[in-house]
Amino acid sequence: MKPRQSGFRHLIDSTHYSLKGLRAAFRNETAFRQEVGICVILLPLAWWIGDSPVEWLLLVGSCALVLMVELLNSAVENVVDRIGPEHHELSGRAKDIGSAAVMISLIMAGLTWGLLAWQKFFG
Image (cartoon, rainbow, N blue to C red; front, side, top):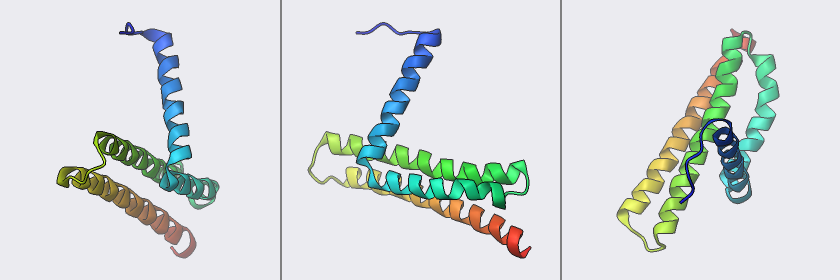
């Protein structure tokens, strides 16, 4: 077993593992790639729509939240698939709950962007 590292070496290793996870998600998860694509389009618009730092943070944060929840959902799905290919009620439930979390984050992001855009252009 590898000894636990601390300090700067731990930070470097953790960053490496995180980037490895982002690459794996981008390579293997279609939904993640789609959401990254949408965020790439929306993020420049956040500078235009957000009239204050807080509004900008809400817009950017809602995009980041969707990506974070999608990463967690993908992790759950991978673990469930690793356990076995046979259908099990709990496995299906875990995947459905992860999917519901993604849906809620997408709804919140849509509401955030929609309300702030409405306020900017019609308010």
